[in-house]
Length: 302
Image (tube, rainbow, N blue to C red; front, side, top):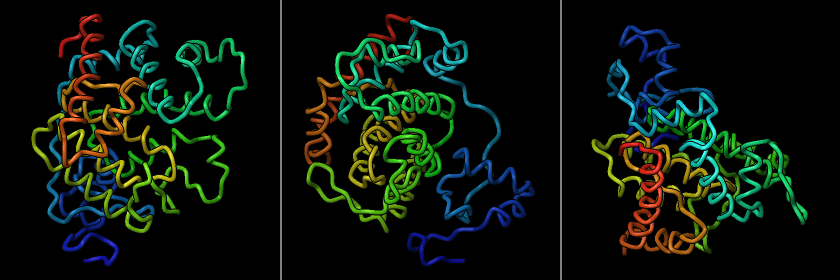
């Protein structure tokens, strides 16, 4: 059955039809969709659309990378002073700071370690605090789901977590956990119109998940295209950088954190990607070298 709202030439079946076809329960089929085990599956409202040529996902768990294994162990034990602790603070501080947060790195660390703000000599925005707490939860979500292939549902969930209980969540026109309703720009460049976001996001995710071996360039290319789509009203940069962490952890690529010092090079890299790829490649490789130094310090193989 073709649906006029679905990508051209794509044929999709329902969860019920998929379950009947492979002799599994509908609950199992939905779980396959929600955890990214069915490439190209996406939600329309509360209904999953599954590519008709999808085969039954293979059973068995992939072996975790040493980094992901350590992150999960330290997260579970709430260990302080390790790679999990450092990743939470460094990524949250830098990603929020790039987007205008006024919190210092020390305040970010205080919030993570003690759930308090620490000393402050100026007015502090509530949204900065909320989005810092929420970003910690987003990183936890990425670590928990890093072995799952990214789906639109995952992307929306990251946005929902990031923007929960912020002032944006109180605005009627701002949809937390869903795609934008109003057109927006990034760096005075036009982005995808709201009505076309789902189509572009579904293709972007499907194309990425259909690749065999994933390279650093594939991760960068996905990120740039995500930012050019700019699917959410706000929070696109942070969600996009969280997705890069996810994709690196999933594909045994050393992660990288775009620091404040690399911000302008990062923006230039996004703008020039597709014409002069070296700008973005060099920026990410520099950030990756910084993270490798942490892995060396904590004696984690990569």
